[in-house]
Image (cartoon, rainbow, N blue to C red):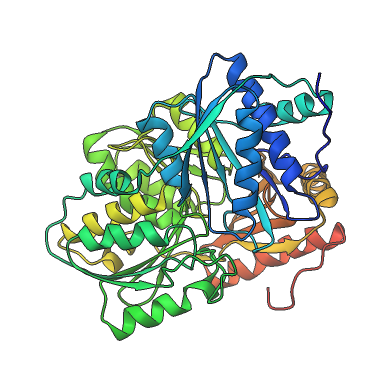
Length: 461
């Protein structure tokens, strides 16, 4: 038995490990995660683990501590270095490693960091993450004499990203890396991708000096929209901090949201997978589910969370899945994991061989009136309780509710959603209506429920 370790109560989450550096997450935690996860890998007969990290200032220290912990269990660790999360996922599959760990704070503020894990080809989430806490709390680690080495797979990864490009005409594309971990790979990728490519904020900087790397927030796409307009680009593409979420704008600067991108991809994927199941999360527009059905596919609404959607894809044999947040997963030609660089290549390829611009592909969906993802501040200890309270009140009122993940409420005007984020101390909401007046009514219903639980909505909501 080794020394026991206790994690902060908010760190072990539904589909990853996440905390605030120096407050809820430390290098000692990283070492304990390495020892705990390494123990699980060794018990399962694993030998090799790939490890990567993003561009956050704390990532180097956490990576060193994590590797120390993994090596102490007897594993061989292949350190692929700084890069996007997709590169780590790719490394595990390409090198047939037993497991993988990515150190990343994803789209969160600079003082956050965390860990995404995979066992073989499958994501580690839910009870498997809680098990790591149990192993650490008992100090019940495997002990061995492991090793580590640094490997460079960047060029090999770029070659694989380019493999599925089959576009026709050459396009002008603007790319915004947001100073995130995708920057270096983006430089190498666009140097070989046909067309003209304009890069923004491709230098990796964990301070994120230009804008926050979260493409779901319209304010973070302003610079991209400006460059698209100035250079008369065919489209623009943006990434989050670790390059696993995509954002896009058309030639007119309009945002193409995650669910709209899934609809566009589905029009291509269902040609080679007729009748295939296409999955989207509870935040997605009803127009997406209707469009999948129109295209001959089988729409499936599922819980939000990259690990949860990947697991559901594997279960159903789905060739494509996606979230409003920009996590989009291709099993068609790809490996079933979320990689925004790959999604970017597929989008450019799709538009380049189409006789329509991205704007027209987007406008196939009927017009509805909706909000983007709206976030309301709520303490970690409070956010889940609020959703339970709202659900109870709705049940008592006889409302039509889908509770697969939070509450999605259907009315004659459309629908509204409230769920607790698994990655931030916020409640996430969205409303969608058939008319502007209906949207106002839906928003009023949501605000009423939030107020009843002591959550104040912004004045501009």
